[in-house]
Length: 115
Length: 115
Image (cartoon, rainbow over all chains, first blue to last red; front, top):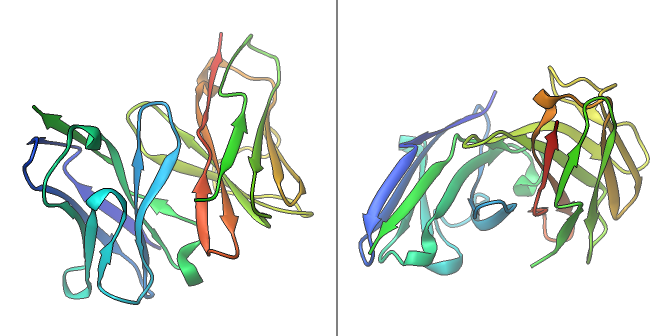
């Protein structure tokens, strides 16, 4: 069975500071990994995805994530936080080709940006 | 990116009544759609996988007679919450798989409140 653990249910950073949201996964097969962002009372928007190509994946809004198999991690980073980045972030794993079948989500990390 | 819509965006109903939620893929044909449930400040829990023209596959612990899913066309899936009770109050989110892009796209969600 696959699982995802997001370390830290709440992360708070200052505007302009580095954003680091942690995600560790467990999978018995090569995983496909995703980061989604959710704004209040809205659905999920795909930030980026890893599907066994380049280990460093660049997404929208300046976010990127690095797949590290040895650490079973897929942490999300952004060099400089913006107020508009405040939202809930979910890491997810799938074992299907192109990662578009059943997704298993982490518990989510709420990102707060301080002015 | 691809667009998935849900209707209604919010609904309030009396206990014992049934509520239907629609999920539509607006610019692609989705052979597979997914229904999730999200409780406040929690992650998304997959309820069922809906395949066009066949019966939905429900996750363990989800009552298929209570949460009726119909995927009658390649662009529409419906979730009907039958005989709703206050404990069914939640945020319901659908997603649709775009086979061309190999990605799931999420709807904006439907907030159900059962009085």
